[in-house]
Structure formats: C-alpha cells, structure tokens
Image 1: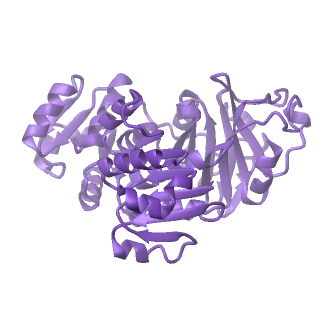
Image 2 (image 1 turned 90 degrees about the vertical axis):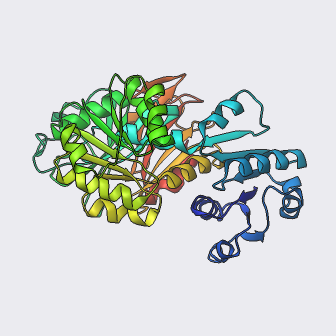
Image 3 (image 1 turned 45 degrees about the vertical axis):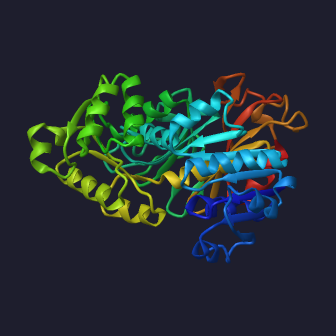
Length: 436
C-alpha cells in the first residue's frame, strides 16, 4: 500500500516508523531539520508544503492508497486531505486538535474520509484511568465497549497469595496475562497473584474498574481536581460530569475561567494557579481523590503533579507532550503520564491494519494485544475454545458480537464477523492473524 504522511513531527514519525516495513511510505515535511530525522527510517522524505497541490502531485497522491495529514495545524491537515482526495487518493485521514472540526466533518462538510481528534482521545484516556490505583496503562477497544488495563499489584493488596480462580474475578473481566519481572505469563486458574505482578485485565469498563478496585482497596472517587482549562481539561470535565461527578477546575486565564464556568454547569471553576499552595489549602483542593494536570507545558504539569502528590493526593495524572519524559515523570512520583501524540498515532495506525483494527505492544514488545475481525475462513469458526488448536502464548480475552461483549469460556465458539481481543506473546503473535 502506498501511504503519504504529511508532517514529520512526533506523530508523523511514529506513524512512519510503524508503517515502513509493510508499506511504501512517503513523508512530506516543510522543515529541513525534521527531514533529517527521517534518515533512520525506510521512507522517502520530500521537502515541501503538504497542503500544496504541486507537492502532493510530486508525492504521488494521484495513485496513493492513503494520505495521513498529521501536522500540528488542523487547517493544514484538512486542506491537505481534501486536496489529496481531489487528486485521486483512495482514503484520507486528518488529525485535528479542535473537536469543533470533528462535528463539522460528521456532517459531511470537509471532504475528509476519516478524522481523529486528539483532545477527545486524550481526555477519554485520562478518564479511563481515574480512580484506578496501580494502573500504569489503559486502552479502549471495540469503540469503548472493551477496556484493557495494566495494573501493578501493590504490597497491601488483599488479593496477594490468592489463586486466580479464588480472586472472585467479575464475569465480564479476564486476566489476559501476568507480567512478572521480565516474564510474560498466560495465566491459568491455579496461578497465584504476587506483590509486584502487573496484571493485564480485559473486559467491560465496569468489570475492569470493579476488579481494579478490589486489587487495591482504593475508595470510590468522589473529588477530582483538574488543572488547566484548555481543550483537554474542558473535555475531561464534560466526561466526568456525565459520570455523575462534580469536578473542580483551576484555570489561570480570567476570561477562559468565565467561559468554563458558563459551559460546565456541574464543575466548580477557580481562577488561579495550580501551584498556588494558599489556594489549594484554602479551598481544600489538596484533599481531592485524584488530581489531573493538563496544561500545555510539561514542566508545569510535573510541578503541579509533584506538589499535589506531596500534599497527599492519592492519585496524580499528568499530560506530557514529550514522550521521552513519560518514564522520568513516573519514576519521580507521578502515577500516570499520558502522551497525546502517542495516543493519536496509535489511533491513526489502526486504519492501516486491515482486519487487525488495533494493535498494542506491551512490556517492551514482549507481548501484543490485538483487536481483529474473525474471517469466515478461520479454522476456529464453530469450534469450542476448550477444544480449539490455539498456540501456546495466545489468549482470546474478549469477543464483541453484534454490539454485545462476551468474556469467553471454554464452551464458547467464534463466529464470522466477531471482533476479538487477543493477547499474545511476541513469539506467537505472527500466527494470530492467520489463525483468525
């Protein structure tokens, strides 16, 4: 497949790196310094303006199967996709940050085939991990019907020492794997839960949240503080309001604070600074259950997060724009650092995977989680899973059939068109797509 990527920033390079092995990739970038960063990739780099018809023609848009516009400027991405479509590109995907463009696109007004919105994806990812103590990662599958989390079993967990079959795992939840040290275990009912284990859980969001709470005895979240009332902070507050919460939000810009207060009827908005200790103590904001810092500056988010952590907030989540900072932030005390650019790249990449609708790597590529549509030619069709010839290292964690979620047992069998969430060790991953 011939793919043209507009923009060689963090998102564009991540997409190019993921696609270079299996596709003919051209990357268009107007910054010569970013062009140099592409030299380590097996792609054709083209210096120019990706919204220009001439540049798109030079890149071969007339014969392209896919154009992905991933610059940091929404309008450039939309124009580039619309222009490529006019030239004959089969499918176009535009990355946008402003959700207003997404609403316009849904009405069919922009001439773009697919659109992904970073503010919505990021705010949803943050909402998914709020209140899940020990959770180090969370991802949605099947349009949000399935949630996967990677959760560290803490020293005081009441489930330590229990066998999985004794742990009262909710019926709509599966333990897809246990990561113990550098070993990835496909678990059975006799496996024990040990302190320090990382459990990969797959199931409905309600069931996964329930089991995560059992793992840590973490109380139900009642108070959430959001620092930063930009697009992500605003969308996050909206999501939390729909869950029956009444979040509190700190925004330094006075005019923006007034707008937020008018548009978030169940959110208490403060005009101030997230590092203002006097404000935090006076308003009791440091006594919240979860604090989320989503300003546009990594340094500010780190400072706010560490301050609130020291003041006693049990869970602190921050937005981080530089992916190189994620590990550093979590090592110095931040519970979860979420990178919007990585999330948007993963969302875009899934459009290129055919029947594989989503793919995630775990534990430094030692394992993979795939969302894949079952082919009518699969040898597993109609075969009870207990009797199916599934390779060692593969676990079918969930099935989505006609909009309903099934957490499979040995008596279940796959049907054509099922969407399955499969956990696989790296060694077995190559056989999964052929099998399904």
